[in-house]
Image (cartoon, rainbow, N blue to C red; front, side, top):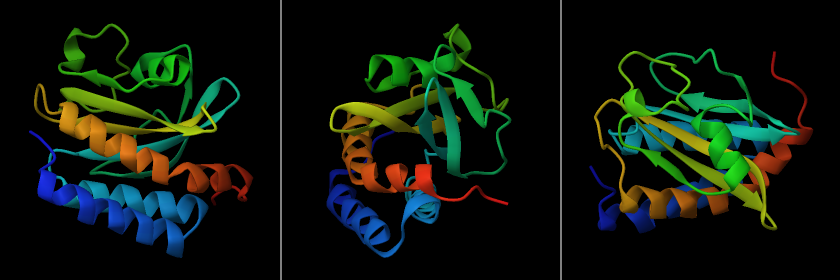
Amino acid sequence: MTVPPRAVAPSLLQVDAVVTRLHGRPALAEVCRFLRESFRHYRWVGVYRREGDTLVLDAWDGPAATEHTRIPIDRGICGRAARDGVTVIVDDVRTSPDYLACFLETRSEIVVPVRDQGRVIGEIDIDGNAVGAYDASDREFLEAVAEKLTRAVAESAVAPPRD
C-alpha cells in the first residue's frame, strides 16, 4: 500500500490547518484522527513525546487503546527510532525481536521521529494489519507530517496532564 501522490499536498495542507487552529495534545489528537481516517492502511496512529529516556503517548486514534503509554527508549521499535533518530519500517512485526506487541492483528509498523533543531522530541507511530503495509511513499509523507508536528509536540510537553 502506498500514499497516493495526489493525496500528499492536500493532506499536508490539512495538517497545517490543524496545527494552526489547535495546539498541543488537541492538535496531535486531530492529526492522528485525520491520518487514520484518510489512509485506511493506517489502522492505529499515535504520537509519542520524548520525556528524557521515555516515550510518552500524547495522542492516538484507533480501534483500541494501547497498553504501551510509556516506552523506555531502550525498548521496542519506537525506542529504536528515538535512539537512532531515523524512520523505522518493519514489514512483519512477528519477525522483529524489537516489537512490543500491542494488538494481535498488527503485522507491520512505521515509526517516524519528530525533531526540533535536529533533536528527537517525539515520534509518529503507525500500525498496520497487512504485512508490508508501508513503503517509501509512507516514509516521505510521514516525515513531512512530522516536520509539521514539531510545535504541537513541544507544546504538549508543557500542557497540564490529561484527566
